[in-house]
Length: 139
Image (cartoon, rainbow, N blue to C red):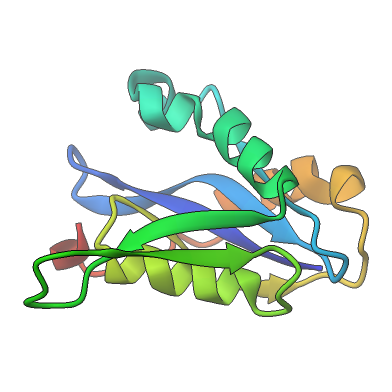
């Protein structure tokens, strides 16, 4: 499976902060887990509810975005299928392109396909690993 930290921009500290983890296996199962006790998560309703919201969307096999090209007056829908082997990488790219305040960090691989068995440990791992740095301007 592949996994990566979910990063949120901390306005107070002016840096990106790991608030959760996203994991995807080769069977199209994608799941996120958010650290509910985190200061940013508990103080931001959108972050607090994202685990339930996105896990429901992922269970349907896809996630959708509205994409607007630079200078365009309208947008179009982009659908990412969870069974795409590059799902996390493509999802990461969409979040960066949209300049969201939530991003996906560096993608890593774990030699297992059982997300449920590992996701809590992966959440702890991404939260305690070396701080991920992204440019302040990306916030």
